Image 1 (tube, helix red, strand yellow):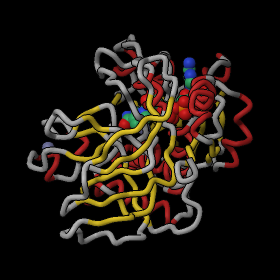
Image 2: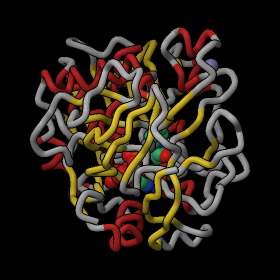
Image 3: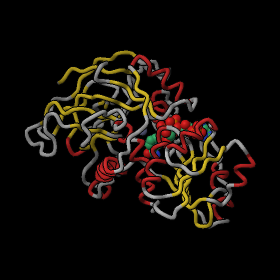
Image 4: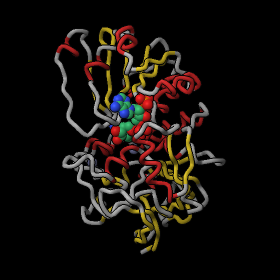
Length: 350
Ligand code: NAP
Ligand code: ZN
Ligand code: ZN
């Protein structure tokens, strides 16, 4: 076994302390990644604070982190896609059954047996706990690692492994492109990636936000519209405006209000995961022949496609780099919507 170190919380208070643990030895198909940066996704906060229980139990000690980028420092004998020195990424899952239609179809996140999550989960043996990216190293089967071609500053790449793919996948699936009017609800880690990606795909993008102070940033990111959703008049004025709405909101909110902003045949995709079930008025969908859908991250092939798309379009995440002693502060600020637009932990110097 490989001795390594990370930062773990022991309970839902989510206080992070140094934590020594073991990674498996590098097997024939594995690579060892020396982690350089790990992004802080709001899903880390939900799970560290046990906010998704009982749907998703929180397992402690928990080392969160599923937006991982680092350098390959060892490769197994059968590894073909990576060499020592390459830059590699890990997203939200590190294994799956490899046999079901979802796995063979490259949408491993929907593995019918349940994929092995990068942390707060177990390996496919259902026994060995998984620990995430707030750590110095990760051992992963090369099949579940992503190739990163960038060589310079990697901080803005890490968030692509979750925030990037989670927004790219539904934008692609629902045909966002030139001529489409797109709204992105919530300008946080996911939301700001959603804006950049939808703009790069050629859509006309509006941000729906509770933070009027973010309007200049939204426009800088390429949005041409901005609606303060706390302003009832502004929301009324925007009714029926959009073909597609990507909801990245982390807190409980009224879906009916957001559905009212869709035009005829409009589609709203939920990716944000609030902690409470929501009330849905049937009229919100029936009136305009609307679609309400969900989406979970993306599979390995599409995540690679997204990384390549971002490289081609010079897209990275806007990040604030922190040291691991500031994780709790970063959590509090993220919950207050005071993040521009992703906290990333410098693990190389930790
Ligand atoms: P984040 O950085 O905290 O961004 C969430 C944004 O939601 C905030 O910045 C804020 O934007 C907005 N917001 C907060 N409270 C609100 C409220 N009461 N009403 C309306 N808007 C509110 O979080 P994130 O990392 O982007 O993650 C967003 C959500 O997606 C989380 O629930 C996370 O667990 C989930 N997620 C899902 C997937 C998936 O595969 N489906 C993957 C990753 C994350 P404004 O300041 O602009 O209002
Ligand atoms: Zn995430
Ligand atoms: Zn499977």
